[in-house]
Amino acid sequence: MGGVIAAGSQATVDAGAAILAAGGNATDAAVAACFATAVGEPTLTSLAGAGVMIHRAPDDQKVTVCDFFADGPLTPRSAVEPLDFFGVDLDFGPTTQRFYIGAASATVPGVIPGLCQILERWGSLRLADVIKPACGMMRDGRELGPYQGRAARLLEPILTYTSGARAIFAPNGAMIAAGDRFHLPQLADTLESLAAGDWRDYYEAKLVTAMLEQFGPHRGGLLTREDFDRYEVIFREPLRRGYAGCELFTNPPPAAGGPMIAMMLSLLDPVDDDLRRGSLAHIKALSCAMAVADEARLEGIDALEGDRLDHWHRRFQRMRHGELSAPPSIPARNCTTHVSVLDDAGGAASVTFSYGEGNAHIIGDSGIMMNNLLGEEDLFPGGFDSAPQGQRLPTMMSPTLISDPSGALTVMGTGGANRIRTAIVQVVSLLCKQGLDAEEAVAAARVHYENGVLNAEIFEVQASAAPSSPDVFESMETKQVVRFNEPNLFFGGVHLVRRSSEGELSGAGDPRRGGAFTVVG
Image (cartoon, rainbow, N blue to C red; front, side):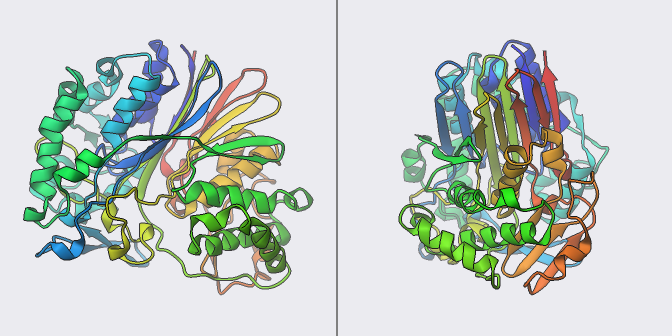
């Protein structure tokens, strides 16, 4: 079976493409690519992280969201003494930022249960076959690209904090760097053992046992047997909305990202036809939509929909003709990646997943670094003690599918924490309203407004793809404009695939985050 795949590295894409070429469907290819991120994007995510997938069936076109995001542990932080939870400062150049790691930053992961259950539900190949491309790369090694090299340097204090992490990320005493060949044979062994029988048996006996030993209350962590017993991979109906004559499907509540995307598109739909892209009016409309969605989120997920939507439309119009608001910001960080796949039969799979920045501990001898999602400040604007106990954590992850009346189909998603929602809104608008192709829409300059600060890319990809002039920002009622003179990873990494109404396949891997895409067949 052929198709098209886009993801955050060539290695990730190659694994999925190999499965498509071998006759696998979109689900098989997406799962294979996710396993391959461990070698293609080793600093951006982990198989002990959490994620979300959106799936479209090839026969009846039914769209389903698979939620394998993390659950908060039942044990309160106050019940563990001493708590193994501490900050590590990472150097971003002009500034430093504190990230929280340690045993108590680990939450119940969902990636392995999620990917395996997705494969059981929608895949056509055995797990043992789907892992083969990734395992081959882990043993043979793959060269790290420039973006992975930058990420490795940034995360070095975390990735070298424990002896287990150093053995993987600094095997010769020096941190891995762009151009180095990265190997992870112990994870290949783990995956082959996982796939040798019923994956649940190995997962429970080896990986869960190791996680309980390393991240339980006796080690300063929060995880207990009950947390793993309660964890479920949840299959949900998608959030479904119309925009520009298209039908959009994305991640529903309790996630925040999908509802915020739907709200912003609803606010922009009536006005953006009349606005010249890159003009002051267009950039202000985008900024106002972003600000209104932020305000609504502060009232809770329910405020983004239903009876409150008319209120937010009025708020948007007042703001467009007055001053922008600046609700409290939420720190913007997080290592996340995305995979998008379409197959020739009409199936689609789009997966976003993350491990935070990792908590520095390798699970047993598995080669898998544990997540630090409980140390992610952007997930808990009310503070770390506000993390929901025994419940699904909130997320901005928003894998998205767009169905065009002509029959065209687009699948996309991105990492980028708070910029996930704004990046997707802008790319959707460029595709559906402006008629740009996949690569143009992904490459186009982006803006992100939050807390009174307008972050804006100002560069010329083509005449229509960038703001008309840097001067366009001078009249914005913002406390600060931060200009980026080239595409920047701050604005996410939208990896996108499309099938035209004529059946032509195309795609785009976002260069901001080392993306790539391949058409198979």
